[in-house]
Image 1 (cartoon, one colour):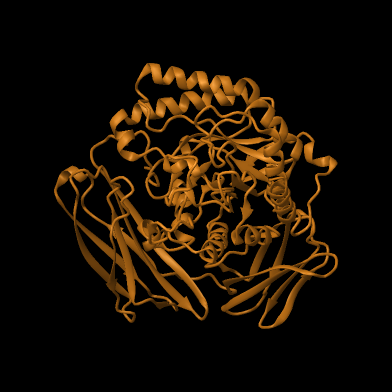
Image 2: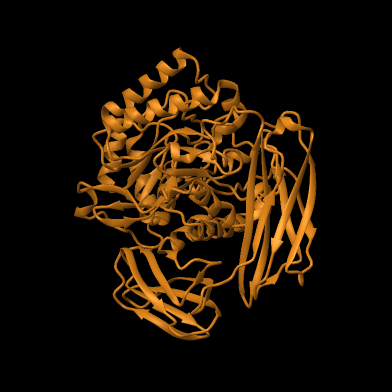
Length: 549
């Protein structure tokens, strides 16, 4: 038995130091000044990318974090060391950390997106529920207000449209506003938000909150079927229009044997490759922060904490557990891939983007990165041997060049000239502005109560140099629970400059908000850009106080 425990500890230490430890330095615990401006986070005057990780202490085999959770400071200390060593700078929680746990986080130098779970299925119109919620918020703020490691408060996770309809938009808004007011008063300067979900509350007016925050899973259906990749996330910020920071508070892939599509049934390599691609998509979408889901498997989610059931929700972890006695876990391939990807997060340039010959470079690099190269057509066109850790910015000029599609290779090296990471980004540059194709959704129906059958027209114009794809993808999403809707296509005439497609849809009786999405790709050489549009039609006025106008 002693040998088995020793083996587990050795496995843990080996994984911890697999790529070299990033030691905590004296600056890690200094006081910070947090600012939210220009769609970004700034800490002590420097732009800060919230590179977080979903983390839940008290969720190991045999545990349930929602039932009598107790502090495990030594276990948590080891977890935080592993998380920091992998290049993450923040953890995201769903519910409160205790005071001594926050003290531990503060000492590591990590930041916290601090959950104060307000039950998303509660009766927001019930004074008793509201009072208990406020008491919980007050209780947490009594000590959390003293910690500057907290950089955001999350006050609810994934409220469902039908529940907001049931309790009322007015009651929902008033509850959120009460909590926001309390936190602003007691912990000023720290933004407050909820975790919406890009599949169910994408229609919500996130300007109610200080930042835009969504859980965003790409299972290839729903919005992701139509808009595809980064566009399915980019529109969330564009739709809200106030250029607040956009944080993706969950995204991931389960390696369960159960499930369908990409919701479960992913291989370990599929999880690894999928998480890296999601990171790239979210950076291309303009994210100010990302929180992949999540650190280690949660056996409790299937209802039997002592059994690792074949349930999709139990297998999202980047660390897995061998059995009930394993309290440490073992890293999956995705963990090493994320650690490598974290070496340098490229927030600019972005895929599917046109730059008028001046390409801004923005990178968030780890401390071991000292050199960056950019290669185009097998030639080094940019080299910097003094890359600064944290935020680094520069620009790349193609002055005078005509329209050119560019597949750029970014390479990052340490001081021994060892290649730490490489990544490719495809963009378009040119000296003149671009005349783009357009795709627009129109309908004369303004309320789902107007009838059973909906008529919609997709208007596509392409008086440009770009080559149209053969199909327009579209989907009607009825927001019936998690139902994604059925994705369809309509054939285009790639030579026509102006064309329209008439569609019909039978509105489900229980649909209270209908999302309509359409998208098409255009190409110029290797450069591909997606054009899309979205439209929402509500049943009655239940959402008027909380929806995007």
